[in-house]
Length: 186
Image (cartoon, rainbow, N blue to C red; front, side, top):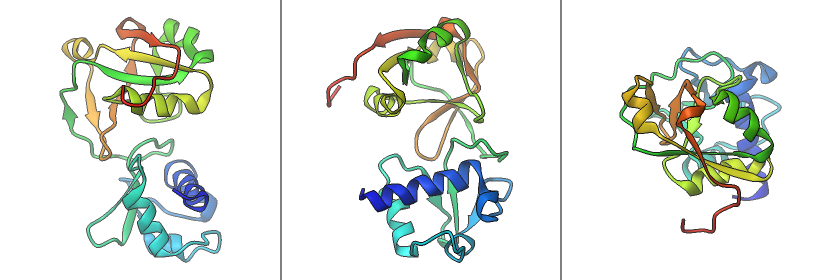
């Protein structure tokens, strides 16, 4: 993505996940916003074609359009109240979470907490978890025993962009697998 596309994507994440009111945007109960309301806003200096490019080509698939491209939503990561209409799924045996080393002690004591978001985000592969975790400082990779969590009654959901979501990950299901960023292909 170009620098401009990155900036637009960050702006969309901000208004669709956290602060729609910052541009007087209204989200419906499921997090959908009218594309026209975004494009007509003076703070949004990008075209529909640029918006479409970001939705279709974002490597993390953060956003989705409805079928007729008149509505847009963030797929997960909201701090505002929305109902994502998620279905419960059976997770893979192991999922991964990338975080910064300075969070590790608290995680080992309290587990993974959702904070201001609706869910804890987990990846099915190490590389995706690494990409998320390294944005926040020195990377630490955690393996989650999602099979055991599920067997113990924890509910898992899968977002539209294939991120596993859970309310909380207790520390006893976590294993530190790496404190160094993995090389590509792992």
